[in-house]
Image (cartoon, rainbow over all chains, first blue to last red; front, side):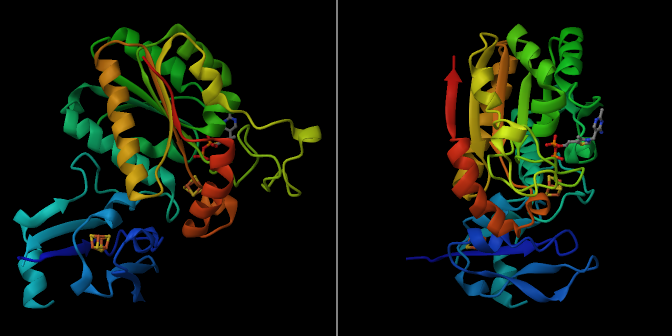
Length: 74
Length: 255
Ligand SMILES: Cc1ncc(C[n+]2csc(CCOP(=O)(O)OP(=O)(O)O)c2C)c(N)n1
Ligand code: SF4
Ligand code: SF4
């Protein structure tokens, strides 16, 4: 059976590092990056990209609409 | 980026992206603020209903005073608490338009208590989006009418005391009793499921306006992590443990 794979792209400069996406993710994919963005925030990034299922939970709770979600059969 | 990721991150695989009605301005809200989530839902509903050119928002005084910078529709900016009065005028002058107010709990339940009560009692054909974070966020976290007993704020450093400050006002319950309202509901926006549910409620409220049904009132119980002095995650937990007890979620009226 084809496996469903997901991925996210974070608008790094818009992210304020609130971390609510990481709390919402059922697969523990997201962690804040060690690097900071132009505003000094540690931004959301995929620590475990291979585990993402493209459920969009992270994007739904994001207050700043920073996350685009992709889903594909791989 | 690995080849595999590039393969997934293609235009045709997008399942969720920022609403096209949200401008590219970076919102001035603090990290994790409920205002951002609800702005996004309002934008998505207006976009999906295809009513961008027919919707007029009225923004309040409070942190969301600049809402007009973020959602690309027509707006008016009201004096503090007067959004329902201004929305009344806009909706009566333009009865074919979708008119909504967007208000915080200080704006709506304190200085604007009379305006919201009378607009709802007259059954003005408007939508009210009410963000209840139980505090005055913009001015530095002072007590609001909605601040709960025992809750620490800048003006209640030992917690809200009934003897001194009275009880927290459950204004949505009062509004549900007014015959002018057709739909009154209390929602939240802290989990994916609650975000989806709140979006449905906002959609229903706008559809009611399209059918001239009177006032639709959607409260969203939210957080103010800066005013509450908690991280966004802890603020959500505090809200579930405290706010939801005083402000239980659910639809009070749907006619
Ligand atoms: C006539 C008038 N009185 C008082 C103020 C000060 N003031 C600005 S915002 C605000 C309350 C904001 O609280 P709320 O409506 O809960 O919105 P939040 O910032 O929490 O989103 C107050 C009292 C004002 N701007 N104008
Ligand atoms: S799409 Fe779902 S699985 Fe992927 S990062 Fe977001 S919440 Fe986690
Ligand atoms: S002060 Fe509170 S309500 Fe205002 S933007 Fe910050 S978190 Fe949001």
